Image 1 (cartoon, rainbow, N blue to C red):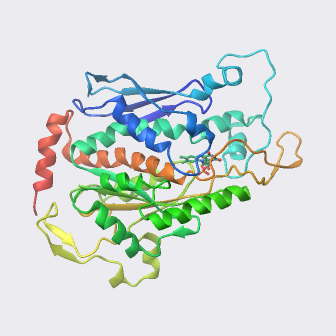
Image 2 (spheres, rainbow, N blue to C red):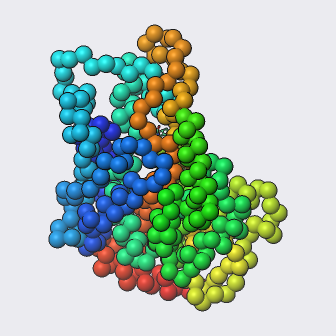
Image 3 (spheres, protein in one colour):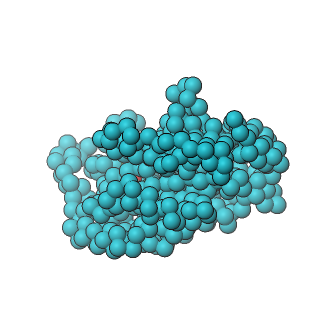
Length: 401
Ligand SMILES: Cc1cc2nc3c(=O)[nH]c(=O)nc-3n(C[C@H](O)[C@H](O)[C@H](O)COP(=O)(O)O)c2cc1C
């Protein structure tokens, strides 16, 4: 089974990651992993750091001559902030004790892990919490999930995401979104979706909505506020039968939810119609079954309102999952807080920050679900090498009841 760990602080020298459980013989390159890292850095509403922090991952083990060797793949990513502000960060974030007095951060920012973090770890300085809870870590997460994404691609499973709501601007209905995505995903698969969405500054397929979203970011920036929103991720090329209904911790929707909810600032996940299904009658929710030889397994659906999963198991239809991201907590217009040292009521201090990180978060969400889906496939096929997996995968895609 594929699993990964990241290490590193936002202003430390580098981020480190290890992904293990990858089959041998999978083509993996730093260049391909960096592709999604570059995508994670683009999007209207980003802050200053993204402009100069160019993420290029280095693979330090587990890959030889461009192919995995079955062992752990380790990666590192430099934090340019460390070199850029060399008089500050190597001292502030020194792993060795230092002689100088380093100023403590004592004003917790609402919406961040600042206060809960110091309460948990009993710090008198918020710096260690900020450093690790920061979404800078998602850069390494995208890198760590990259090999799983490449494995899926080798099997013809594609992942693509787009923004469907940003603040007050969004599609009117589920059907409206389906119309937009169906024409893009169509025959070619979900990568076409992200490629098309990447043409928009806010990763939205609709040009008119894009304009409204950009205007909204401008307005909230002027007001000193911030924005979040909702994105949708589609996965194509999955056969029926991945995941299981037999236990709560084997349901594929449950496992995908954890990967998304484990990402900074995510506040909800839904599959297919999701929350909207609670307000509709059953005939406008469930998807009638048809015979369709074009679909792996031979059964199709008249609609895909379930989002490609029933009973925690894939149906053979595209998997559709949506996630909601809260607005960025760091805002120019301050919020009330309390100094943890003096106990006095204060206002938060502004630090360099994005106004809206939603377009960037789409890439993180696309990435974190890749190992979950790859594991559901590996559970079915088994296999220690890509050569073993490919014929078993072909058999699985062609199997009929
Ligand atoms: C890709 C990405 C970029 C983010 N960038 C920022 C940022 O620039 N400023 C900020 O205050 N929060 C940012 N956040 C959000 C915080 O990381 C998040 O609100 C915080 O970790 C607490 O979230 P939680 O309550 O869900 O754990 C970002 C989140 C993501 C996923």
